[in-house]
Length: 56
Image (cartoon, rainbow, N blue to C red):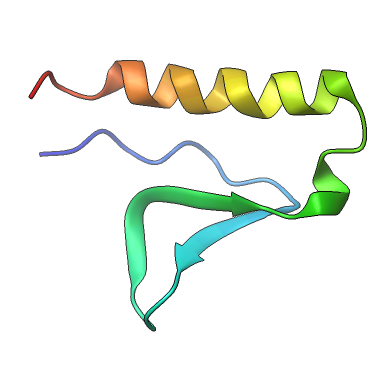
């Protein structure tokens, strides 16, 4: 069982390359990373989510 996906907020969307969403992956639009602080926030959210997953 995987961890729940963090609450989505703009400008992020579920990753979808093939017509099916990829569980646990998101894409953040370039306009969502307008400065270092915004990038740092997205990286922190992603690493927090990854750390919540069970060990493989």
